[in-house]
Image (cartoon, rainbow, N blue to C red; front, side):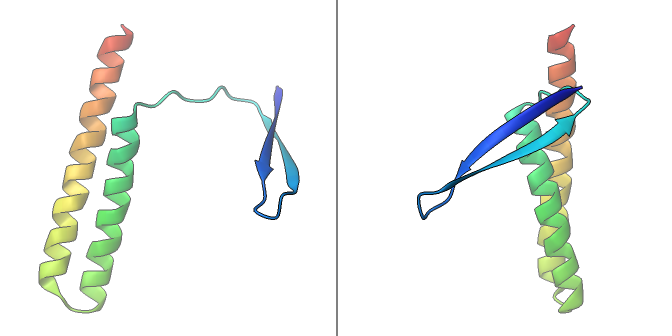
Length: 85
């Protein structure tokens, strides 16, 4: 088990320390995979808002964003796994 301590700077000039216990190693994830997950979540939120406000064109745009994010995430994950071999 490892203990990690991170220091963050507050805009007023003070610092505070946060310590957390971590029993797992950090996962190395490609930037494209992170962007894909972000796009997937953003697209899902846009779809939800479009459905709530009954704007089908916004929902369709969000669906395209979510699908694009999923494809980007899967492609980056597959490429990273092949590169690791």
